[in-house]
Image 1 (spheres, helix red, strand yellow):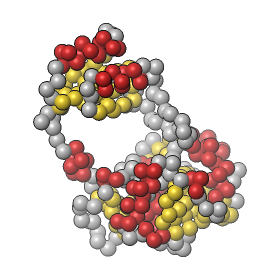
Image 2: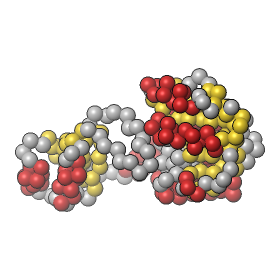
Image 3: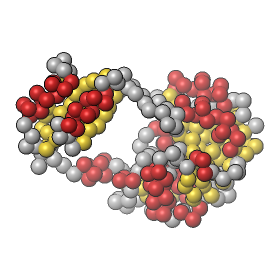
Image 4: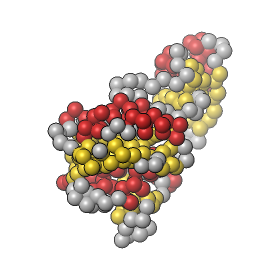
Length: 290
């Protein structure tokens, strides 16, 4: 059956009030989006990102009285709010996403493929992902830049840390490309669960451990991967440097081109850094521990 979608604009001071108004009116779900479409710079763990201008979308059952719904929104939020009500075609959203998610090649050897499709090259290193579990699939430039680095570098017998692992795609790719062991860490329990599920699906679970940052072992790593955006990278720089062995490598991504100078300046005290590599507006910075 079709659905009714109500979309309204507000600012961060009225964000929670507007969200609650949609739920009070019977919204089955509410989603938030930045009205200005600015890049989201990931905050430090525990912080809450706030956009200045927000688009909220409430999804309602098709038989709701739209005139009453509009009247209730104005009563709770004021007459000046911008809102739009429209019918939404019913479809299998998971299937639609899976139809759009195709195998992707990174470098010479590595492919990331959805589990429901056969790999284009059966003899390649084929990392199979379930889109329903994936926090990161390689479709974003920041992940792609890291996967390309992994394909281009020697990983045999290396111990690796994936800091901010998401779906575990970087950790799993590293293991499939020859790494000895990988510790994957994230503050989100669902990310850790997705990482372990994807590791099992790719037959590398025996070489991977997933844990929250405070549970990391007291050890140093040959390679440290951190695809977590610029803000946390600056805050975590001393810790990530300490986790890297002398002559070990670090790979940083989630960085906008405009943030390159700050990251280079921050990490240069511990690492000999390579020239940043760019894809779209994002860059990857890598280097060797002094």
